[in-house]
Amino acid sequence: MNTIENEQKVYDKLDELGIKYSVIEHEPVYTAADLELIKDRAHGIHCKNLFLRNAKGDKYYLVTAKDDADIDIKELKDKIGSTRLSFASSERLMKVLGLTPGSVNPFSLLNDTEKEVTFYIDKNVLTGDDLNFHPNTNSKTVTISLDGIKKYLNGIGVIINPIDL
Image (cartoon, rainbow, N blue to C red):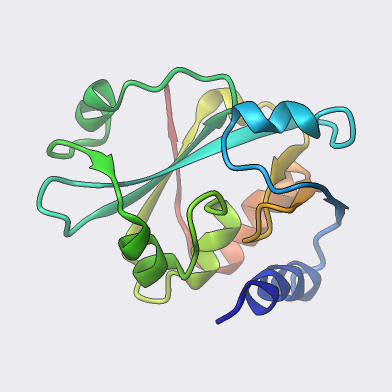
């Protein structure tokens, strides 16, 4: 699936579920630090998203936190009851979520047709503020309410696991 189709799937699902959102276009951003370039145009909380795997490589995790959160993946493994964690390779990201690095986010879980990914979100993101995520492409940002992302994830069968990071 190409980037445009992958992006359109997100908008189609949001529209199908009746969720309000707004979209801005921008230069591609690859890291949480790059988000500084768009913060003046997208209000609310900006997030970073880590796509991780366990030591065996048979379990995957998506962890969402505020863009400035300091996440210790050694401590995280104990909090989620996993073996040693590492970043999943770009090949695994493509295989499981159909994405290239820099685009992973909670919207991406729509592509997890085998339900291989467990989703964790830092409790500091669950404040009621609007949230910002890429719609499976890192050259656009969607602003959505907390209730909106919860409805989206519920609509695609994803369990939200709040966590203290």
